[in-house]
Length: 367
Ligand SMILES: *Cc1c(COP(=O)(O)O)cnc(C)c1O
Image (cartoon, rainbow, N blue to C red):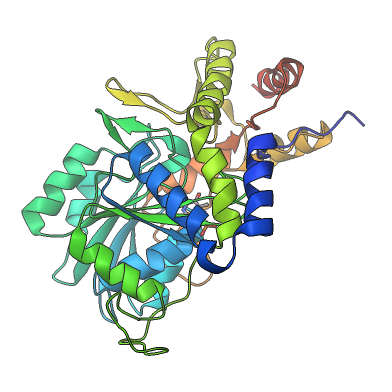
């Protein structure tokens, strides 16, 4: 068997180890929030936003952000049918209904026209998921949000390093949420970040994130409302500080890997990859190839071929509306057809040239 090629693996250097060791040895008592505060500061300045709250996961950031927007039973939230379940489950937990709309064929992100058509008097938010680092059409989405007075919220879990006309992914909507899961470009093992420029929303999520205790509450053990406990630990935040100091290197390497794939596969006309329209930077979290329907390539063929080569290539997200807990929306043609003929290619930080060559050969062979 050839050596395994993993699809993702974090890059942890002596810097992260040093910070985490310091947090474990000294980050207690009056220092117990030091790395958390520092991580939030570093992340805010990287992103160019006013407020950030470190969380236990991106899912937790969404749960609190959506709760703070007042999303509740009977409400609807419009979301692309293509995404990880993490963004849909908080909607369900809040008693609201995710309304799944189709994606665009080229960006694999929400189709703004379809999103606008799905608006009803119950719509409380539209989620913009920047899939695999590809950017949503934020100008259109924000204009639709403004016209109908509906907040646009950004799922930027996969979009660290992505920039839309000078603005970083996650910094454009009412709020943004990031993931630092072990598979993501910047990792703390598990973890996430809630970001916003809205002072009131920030205060509300800050209160929710501390079991409903307001900042100025002076009584001990006195929650003012029912909240959540989706916090990040100081030790995780220490790793996050090291990773954020290295963010340009981490995101830069992702872009480098995507560029190698793009260049070496550019002679295959019936194959498309993560786009990078003018005026944008693709953070390239997950290089993905989509085969044209005419090629006859199937998901099974892709997965069995890569598995036989001991390469950990992953399936494109299933349409969420195709999962057993939701009603199928099979008219979402792109979301339902693209996963049948596409695959995520390995792109971890330390992947080597000969490994990329092995993967590229397999893609060509399948083609
Ligand atoms: C990883 C991911 C999430 C969830 O992140 P967690 O930190 O695991 O909660 C949400 N949305 C997208 C698009 C993701 O890739």
